[in-house]
Length: 304
Image 1 (tube, rainbow, N blue to C red):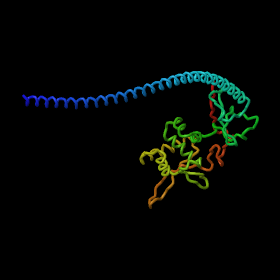
Image 2: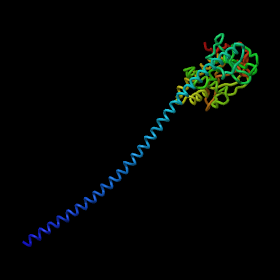
Image 3: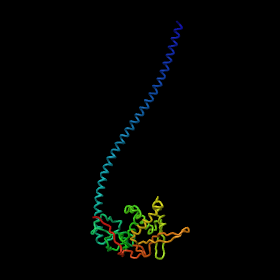
Image 4: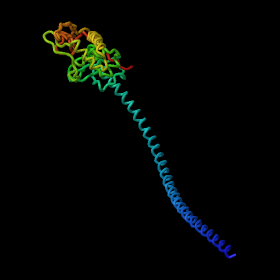
């Protein structure tokens, strides 16, 4: 009976030790959970504090939005009033400009919205003066104040090729969709404007002021129009020359001249600007300038 009792005591002691270890683990777990609960509580308190701050900030932003909306309403009203005043002032200015033009005034082009003017006669003429500025006037009217010097050249006195050459590339494309015409205008611009840079024209002598060879024109076209093949450039040479003749009202001439290259002779076309060619506004041209009556005047139509 003693041995059985000993075994029972040992078994009970083992169970007690197991329970003790389990209790210790549970105690540690409880401490861990309590720590996590404390951290969670702290986090909740932090979030509640942040939430309170966000609510306050939201309230401030709502107030700011209300202020901005009120300011926008006031600004819109002020802008509308300014637009009404501006429109009225623009109408007054246009009326005064129309009256001054009808009295013979010459007004700087940059100051005139000619499309909005109601002009007696329905159209204006664009001219250039000795001061290099461009003006609007009623056709053939003299400025009583003589501003800007004498009339150098009216826009309508220019040849079509000169008018196109004065346009920038965007305006040129919107004016004509024919590539040969655009190339002809650019070619004329290269001849007359030293700032262009890529100029295939050559100085002539005696009766020829300037000329361009067909071969040089072909290479120039390929530089102007990227991706154009050599064969297509040759076709464009002929079409561009035709456009030059047409747009210059045949002020240019075509000549063929025998050339020699690498021991071989060939005939090449040249586009000539002869010394007696009548080119409006260019020195040495017969009939150029404002006194020339050989050219038609193109009107710039006004509003109304």
